[in-house]
Amino acid sequence: MTTVLMILQMLCAIALIVTVLMQSSKSAGLSGSIAGGAETFFGKKKGMDELFSKLSIVAAVLFLALTLLLAAL
Image (cartoon, rainbow, N blue to C red):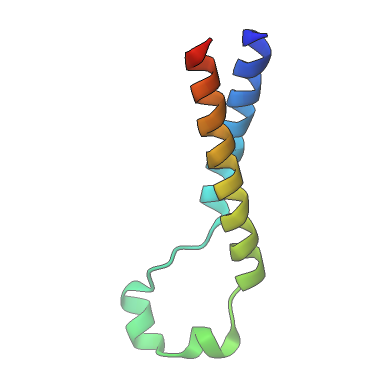
Protein backbone atom coordinates (compact mmCIF):
# COMPACT_ATOMS: atom_id res chain seq x y z
CA MET A 1 0.00 0.00 0.00
CA THR A 2 2.77 2.41 0.92
CA THR A 3 4.63 1.67 -2.30
CA VAL A 4 1.57 2.48 -4.40
CA LEU A 5 1.06 5.75 -2.53
CA MET A 6 4.72 6.69 -2.99
CA ILE A 7 4.49 6.03 -6.73
CA LEU A 8 1.33 8.15 -6.92
CA GLN A 9 3.08 10.91 -4.98
CA MET A 10 6.05 10.82 -7.34
CA LEU A 11 3.78 11.04 -10.39
CA CYS A 12 1.89 13.89 -8.77
CA ALA A 13 5.15 15.72 -8.04
CA ILE A 14 6.25 15.35 -11.65
CA ALA A 15 2.86 16.61 -12.84
CA LEU A 16 3.13 19.59 -10.49
CA ILE A 17 6.59 20.47 -11.76
CA VAL A 18 5.51 20.20 -15.40
CA THR A 19 2.36 22.28 -14.96
CA VAL A 20 4.23 25.04 -13.13
CA LEU A 21 6.97 25.14 -15.75
CA MET A 22 4.48 25.25 -18.63
CA GLN A 23 2.84 28.44 -17.33
CA SER A 24 3.99 31.71 -18.80
CA SER A 25 5.55 34.22 -16.44
CA LYS A 26 3.35 36.92 -14.97
CA SER A 27 5.96 39.69 -14.99
CA ALA A 28 6.51 41.61 -18.19
CA GLY A 29 9.81 43.08 -17.07
CA LEU A 30 11.51 45.67 -19.27
CA SER A 31 9.87 44.37 -22.44
CA GLY A 32 6.45 45.19 -20.99
CA SER A 33 7.30 48.85 -20.61
CA ILE A 34 8.73 49.04 -24.13
CA ALA A 35 6.00 47.07 -25.89
CA GLY A 36 3.22 48.76 -23.98
CA GLY A 37 -0.16 47.18 -24.60
CA ALA A 38 0.93 45.09 -27.57
CA GLU A 39 0.59 41.85 -25.64
CA THR A 40 -2.96 42.66 -24.60
CA PHE A 41 -3.83 43.66 -28.16
CA PHE A 42 -2.38 40.60 -29.84
CA GLY A 43 -3.35 38.38 -26.93
CA LYS A 44 -1.58 35.63 -25.10
CA LYS A 45 -2.48 32.02 -24.55
CA LYS A 46 -4.85 32.85 -21.74
CA GLY A 47 -6.80 29.61 -22.08
CA MET A 48 -3.69 27.49 -21.73
CA ASP A 49 -2.41 29.57 -18.81
CA GLU A 50 -5.71 29.18 -16.98
CA LEU A 51 -5.73 25.45 -17.69
CA PHE A 52 -2.19 24.99 -16.38
CA SER A 53 -3.01 27.14 -13.36
CA LYS A 54 -5.99 24.97 -12.46
CA LEU A 55 -4.04 21.77 -13.11
CA SER A 56 -1.20 22.95 -10.88
CA ILE A 57 -3.66 23.70 -8.06
CA VAL A 58 -5.17 20.22 -8.36
CA ALA A 59 -1.73 18.61 -8.47
CA ALA A 60 -0.59 20.60 -5.42
CA VAL A 61 -3.64 19.66 -3.36
CA LEU A 62 -3.29 16.01 -4.37
CA PHE A 63 0.42 16.08 -3.54
CA LEU A 64 -0.34 17.58 -0.11
CA ALA A 65 -3.02 14.98 0.60
CA LEU A 66 -0.75 12.12 -0.43
CA THR A 67 2.09 13.50 1.69
CA LEU A 68 -0.13 13.75 4.76
CA LEU A 69 -1.49 10.26 4.16
CA LEU A 70 2.00 8.81 3.85
CA ALA A 71 3.11 10.61 6.99
CA ALA A 72 0.14 9.16 8.88
CA LEU A 73 1.02 5.65 7.74
